[in-house]
Image (cartoon, chains in turn cyan, brown):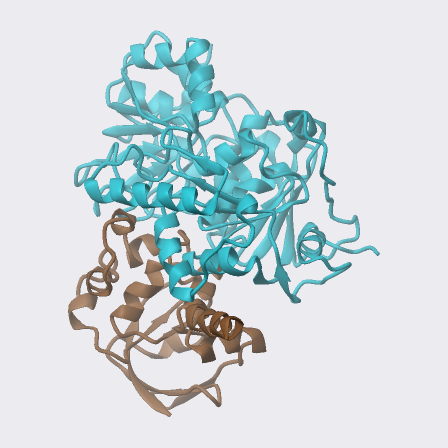
Length: 416
Length: 165
């Protein structure tokens, strides 16, 4: 058999069939079924369906991350309901308040492996493409159906290939690559496609930078996104070897192709209120900001915090800087290496690992008209909890440098 | 054939403006969820929407978060049909699962404005608006079966009832 995309191979595997093509409708059983603070709502739908036991509790993963620690009684009650459900159903992959953001935690726990399929009640489940897995977001009702029946229909998506060539210049990151793709092709550019990356840039990328690309492809409309797993991924997953990585065939059929020369890329920034409203950073230098946010599933891993510390060392911030590590593991490593100390000395407010203010629940909601520069993936109007509070999206370099001046700043001025 | 009043919106309307994330874990009743529909996009909508009204939109309707309330907020407000040039995939699936009919009809938004009344023939896949006629493709049988059952929950309720009996 030849001519198959990654998505065709991964979904055939998840459906237990020998072959499939784009357009086919399959019933699949994912390796992992992920939900988070929405699990209590999913439980209510599950009970409404008339089901009583989760079919594959060992495949279910639940993290508390969207509003942690609970900001209100209602949120706390929601968490309490989830804990009770986890006990009742014998769910072992449960991660408490403070462990971190679902996509980061499941990666650290090696719960998702190359070639596997994960469906998550979270749109950024595309994230798991960084491990060479098929990850897609679904709705709450679909997660309830998965818990109840163990399977869900899926239409095999058409694929597009994005080839990245060259090595990234100093202070240019995978965030800039992702923003440039969005700027060039728009938020509909990958709509309903398996976005499969290729090219020599990928294997040179540090591991912490890789998830940014498939994570941000949720903003591109992608069904899933994929980076071909290499030796660095296999080493990261040690001691696990119980998987078979999947690669698209050289003659796979792609509905679209796009190439980006990463070696020529400048730092990029998304202006309010859309992630595809992207310009080179140089066009907005000097724009005042009142808040800088370093966090989220997109850019709050160890390397992101380290980059910020390198820029901020010896400086004091002129605007609020909120730092929320992606996980407890990231937090600990940043503590042990003195990174947190550097950030706090510069004036950062460091919060509990989790999603923080990304979707406006708590821990850094801006006042009306206040401007935030953020390492997150979304800058839609009202996203951070306040309707008219514009959000700019950029890399950890740009966010850290902008915090120093309280204005959007080129980080290359602070590179040692 | 049924008639429907239209609310017309643009391209890539995202779920944060359809149903803001700040309410996702705090609002749970249909009335409360419906009251916030399109709050950050069109503040006139929630107070004026009538049962049977339809949304007519451009490309990529419902991009962004997977939150299902972005569909249920409209459903609870009385919207049973959403017609767009294209849908974000998760949103499309959420519509089907909620028993809300998603219709892909790229040209409709070019001829209607908010307040216009259109005629819809679901079975024949036909829309008449301002004397223009549009057709739309039927859904795949597995998707149509979910809609016919009234959504994924009623469909599975039936299946679980049959398993018990």
